[in-house]
Length: 99
Image (cartoon, rainbow, N blue to C red; front, side):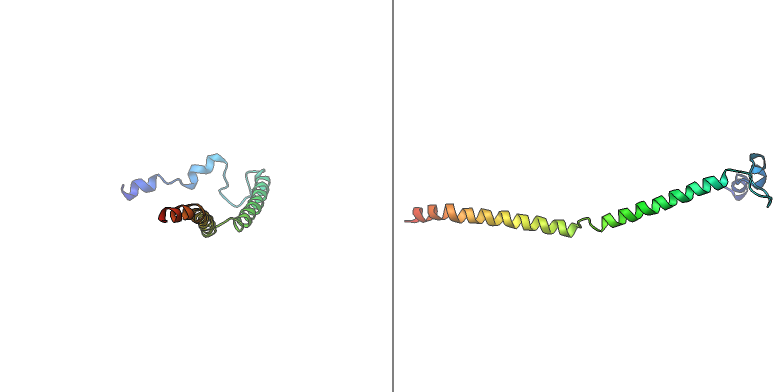
């Protein structure tokens, strides 16, 4: 696309004059603007509280390392139990077969 066509699609200030937007320094054209800004500021402060809550909760979430450590401990416990059962039950049977 050439530069002339690209710049012709960019809106100018004259495009917005009929829509009631401020074109000079005479003051706001929207009397509800202050109320809307106050509402947006309230929403921003609510978002700050929500983000702080999420950050605090993330500090208490288990990491992958903690989860993998727990899995290893459980698997070692199961393996130890299987080894103990093999010694208790298979050991006497194998000794009896060897006699």
